[in-house]
Image 1 (cartoon, rainbow, N blue to C red):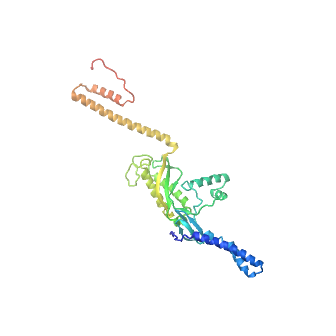
Image 2: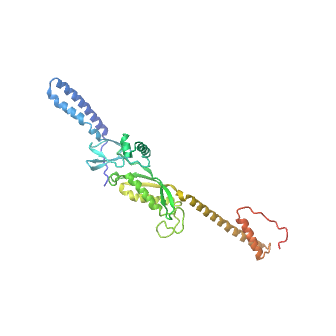
Image 3: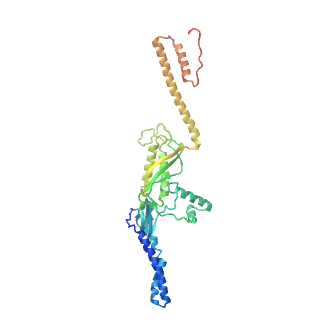
Length: 347
């Protein structure tokens, strides 16, 4: 389906004034013909019938008046056939038998432009025990058939997904998107809003299962057969870009452009969060201890070299071993050392 943009003249105001004048003329014609008929002039009967006929069907042309605000579009069909899309803002008059089509008019997602209305419909649904469509109908709300061309933000609910190591993580994304082809959005898919939401969930699952939550050895996240340091926590920009590309590929046929995708929430699932925190703490402690030991060994080596170079003290192997042991205990301990003063001879 290819989009056809209609370049209709914005003559809605002039047509509105014309229809009102015709109504006024019809009323005047009926009154005038009625007076003449009272005088017995039956020749004015067709004029009265004409006025009554216009009063009966004159409301139909008003259905062809369409108002569009900036960044709005209206997809029009005539007896089931797609005739084109109005995209420019203005006051239009089109064929009154044209019908505007927007299958996603009643769909309310957790996104900009739908949040408040969706919440109100949900509360009304709970109160009436009906679905959102029935609740909206009961409230007298008429959904707009106009399609917004603005950039909108879709924030899907958080998902629990297993990463490449099998650890369950919770992740949430925000997708900035807009409709670029109204014909594809309306006719190629059943409901382009629901379609986008489902594709976002699918893309997140496909990408997240490639990465570990944190850097792990021997994991290939790029698919080139070489292990790398990619992770959900450390490569969030790259992960978001891959999610965006994945969604764009899937929604191309729906006439939707994905402007940007961002990770808004990332954490281990609650059932393993405490264990993973202990694991991170243990890893940090081990790394810190390793650094302390490396530094302590270097300091001991330096002390022995300086003592031997300056011939300050001549130590045999046993004394060197005792000195190394004492220095390592002092340098590697997590408490302050208690010195012992030897007042006697070294030997």
